[in-house]
Length: 79
Image 1 (cartoon, rainbow, N blue to C red):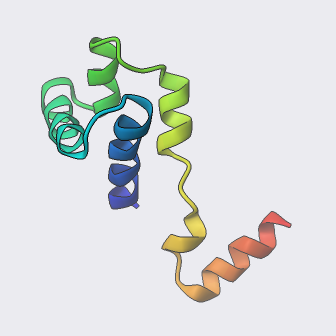
Image 2: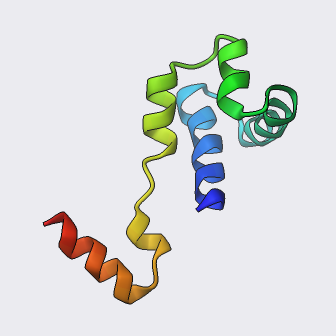
Protein backbone atom coordinates (compact mmCIF):
# COMPACT_ATOMS: atom_id res chain seq x y z
CA UNK A 1 0.00 0.00 0.00
CA UNK A 2 2.78 2.44 0.88
CA UNK A 3 4.49 1.81 -2.45
CA UNK A 4 1.23 2.57 -4.25
CA UNK A 5 0.87 5.82 -2.29
CA UNK A 6 4.48 6.73 -3.09
CA UNK A 7 3.81 6.23 -6.80
CA UNK A 8 0.68 8.41 -6.55
CA UNK A 9 2.66 11.15 -4.77
CA UNK A 10 5.16 11.24 -7.61
CA UNK A 11 2.38 11.07 -10.21
CA UNK A 12 0.69 14.05 -8.53
CA UNK A 13 3.85 16.09 -8.88
CA UNK A 14 4.25 15.07 -12.52
CA UNK A 15 0.64 15.64 -13.56
CA UNK A 16 -0.52 18.49 -11.33
CA UNK A 17 2.75 20.37 -10.82
CA UNK A 18 4.33 19.69 -14.23
CA UNK A 19 7.52 18.23 -12.81
CA UNK A 20 9.74 15.80 -14.63
CA UNK A 21 9.86 12.32 -13.04
CA UNK A 22 13.38 12.69 -11.63
CA UNK A 23 12.58 15.98 -9.91
CA UNK A 24 9.30 14.57 -8.57
CA UNK A 25 11.10 11.58 -7.03
CA UNK A 26 13.91 13.68 -5.58
CA UNK A 27 11.60 16.27 -4.02
CA UNK A 28 9.31 13.60 -2.56
CA UNK A 29 12.26 12.29 -0.54
CA UNK A 30 13.64 15.75 0.30
CA UNK A 31 10.28 17.07 1.50
CA UNK A 32 9.67 13.98 3.61
CA UNK A 33 13.08 14.40 5.26
CA UNK A 34 12.88 18.19 5.67
CA UNK A 35 9.19 18.54 6.57
CA UNK A 36 8.11 15.14 7.90
CA UNK A 37 5.69 14.49 5.03
CA UNK A 38 5.56 15.30 1.36
CA UNK A 39 2.32 17.23 1.83
CA UNK A 40 3.86 19.39 4.58
CA UNK A 41 6.72 20.19 2.22
CA UNK A 42 4.36 21.09 -0.61
CA UNK A 43 2.36 23.32 1.72
CA UNK A 44 5.51 24.99 3.05
CA UNK A 45 6.44 25.86 -0.53
CA UNK A 46 2.90 26.89 -1.48
CA UNK A 47 2.80 24.23 -4.17
CA UNK A 48 -0.39 22.27 -3.48
CA UNK A 49 -4.02 22.38 -2.49
CA UNK A 50 -4.24 19.84 0.35
CA UNK A 51 -7.70 18.57 -0.60
CA UNK A 52 -6.72 18.03 -4.24
CA UNK A 53 -3.45 16.40 -3.17
CA UNK A 54 -5.08 13.95 -0.77
CA UNK A 55 -7.89 13.08 -3.17
CA UNK A 56 -5.34 12.35 -5.91
CA UNK A 57 -2.78 10.52 -3.80
CA UNK A 58 -5.29 8.33 -1.97
CA UNK A 59 -7.23 7.38 -5.11
CA UNK A 60 -5.82 3.87 -5.16
CA UNK A 61 -7.83 0.92 -6.46
CA UNK A 62 -7.59 -1.21 -3.33
CA UNK A 63 -8.83 -4.28 -5.22
CA UNK A 64 -5.50 -4.38 -7.07
CA UNK A 65 -3.64 -4.68 -3.76
CA UNK A 66 -5.71 -7.56 -2.40
CA UNK A 67 -5.38 -11.26 -3.10
CA UNK A 68 -7.94 -12.42 -5.73
CA UNK A 69 -10.50 -13.81 -3.24
CA UNK A 70 -10.54 -10.62 -1.16
CA UNK A 71 -10.66 -8.47 -4.29
CA UNK A 72 -13.91 -10.13 -5.37
CA UNK A 73 -15.42 -9.58 -1.89
CA UNK A 74 -14.40 -5.88 -2.01
CA UNK A 75 -15.82 -5.56 -5.50
CA UNK A 76 -19.12 -7.15 -4.46
CA UNK A 77 -19.34 -4.82 -1.45
CA UNK A 78 -19.28 -1.77 -3.73
CA UNK A 79 -22.44 -2.88 -5.56
